[in-house]
Length: 307
Ligand code: HMG
Ligand code: MG
Image (cartoon, rainbow, N blue to C red; front, side):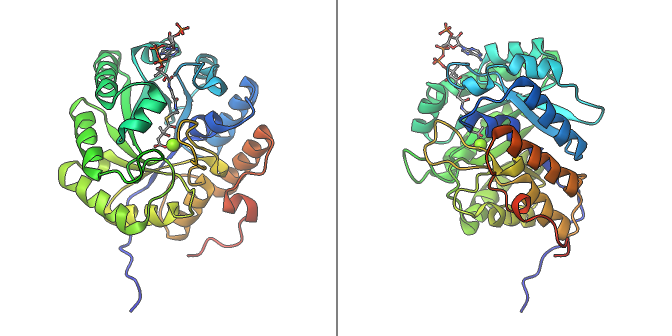
């Protein structure tokens, strides 16, 4: 009996993270002009939600030390939202000064990764996130949130999904509009994803959940397909498949945006993204970082969009 796909009629939202998750993990530090060029190429492809930088400590992530300039100089056309990662009130203040209308707070479901990544306990990160959310509200700045290591931690191994759920509920309660669940090191498999999404769906509206899958072991699209079938409508991706957290050893790139959009287009699902132009953006990304990027559609090109 053939596998029955439920036809997906809703538009799917692609949240692009190459300028942040991608560039934070590159050996080379990309120039401001090249970052702006990549933003333009991504916008030209029709992507409407783009994380353009981080306002974290430049000592921790030197590749994104120019975040203030990137945010000041990148102009979002109507209908396009730029966002940036912020770990604390200082980060929010930098984002506000640069004119950002959206930021993202982040923390991990596992204590050790949180400590390595932001030098704080999960409890202290929740306090910092609450402070950011409270300060952002009167400024009219929307707050997104990440929960990392939901599928597994590079230091602790398996992570009880209940820990991610408890954090996601707190983020929801503090006014974070969407919570992106991260498979930071790309260890997730489909049944696990099904269990995680089901658990979340019992406590939180699914439109507030996004999946942020790294593709270290080639399972990102399989996990995304499970999430899609279960009702998730936002997926994070990085053009060319760049990405990785420098404080999560073994993390490889995010699912490539071209691969995600190829799969969704082939299934007849609308994303608003023009695939040939997205591939051009992927090529621009590869030339900017000076290496062949791992994205499969980027490497093989388009032949057919039929599923
Ligand atoms: P700390 O050293 O504990 O912080 O770092 P501190 O508060 O003691 O401050 C130390 C210095 O940093 C001070 O400067 C502060 O002013 C400065 P100094 O006096 O030494 O000159 N500082 C800042 N500077 C600029 N902007 C700020 C800021 N805050 C403090 N916002 C801190 C704590 C959180 C700052 C640090 O650990 C940090 O920046 N970590 C960021 C790590 C990071 O960006 N990791 C990658 C992103 S997470 C990820 O990739 C996962 C994700 O993709 C989802 C997934 O895949 O699962 C989101
Ligand atoms: Mg990530």
